[in-house]
Length: 327
Image 1 (spheres, rainbow, N blue to C red):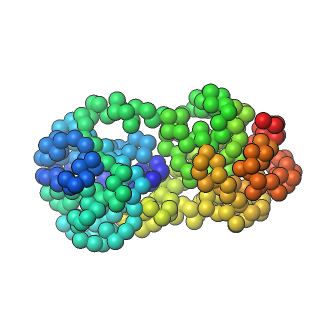
Image 2: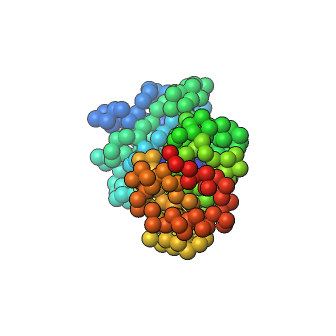
Image 3: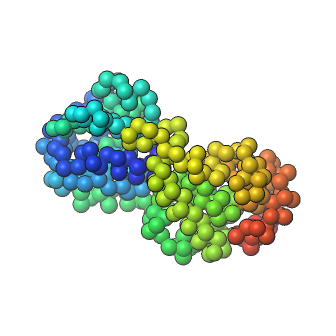
């Protein structure tokens, strides 16, 4: 599933190609009708007024007061084939579709423009295009349940949510789109490393200062990713078909297990928190004793002593020491 920076990258890449262009036809694959929700008639003979992003959803506003909400989910693609070959681009799950003849067996919706075609492909059929009145977008359940994004939220708001969900691991809190929108697995891990907080720390044990560092980290790592064109996860690439370089150039822990921490040199480890593969530095991010005692943290138990000795180097040292309180 794309994370917020990937969707923002897609929006920025697609915008100059379809903005102020007219859609003359919409072709929906009837065998996968659920991929298109709404009436094609609300899209035909309209002009694209603007593109927005809300959380991980792309919103395309039309000049008839309707909006197309697009979510790529796990394997969705948006592929533009313009009149000029140099204008072509592909965004989403990389496959031979990027250079193959389209439409094909994975094409769910085709938007025929006066000056090119936009194909919505989706191998696993989890993604969707939904057409609805622009004035109803914010009331749409998918959008209405989204919390504020990191740059919209202040520290006190996130701290309050951490207290409210006090027994939950902080990583679970960050992944909950109803608490803070846009953070996925990559950026949750990176934000927590930025703040020197172990992902399994109970949210209620964090100080307001610590929560502030997490929020600061979320903003920092996500903006860096947007600037670099998104992550290079196997399923997402930049709109021009080249890969983003966030993981190579900026990621400190995600998918770096077995490599030395860029801060302290201790080997980055991988465990499981909130049901997700989780990356962390066992020295910079002190492992809570209750996580080890639960059996989930056995893989990091050998690093506890070195982690404690590093508390003086952590911005989060006060909170980390409380993290050793037994459950």
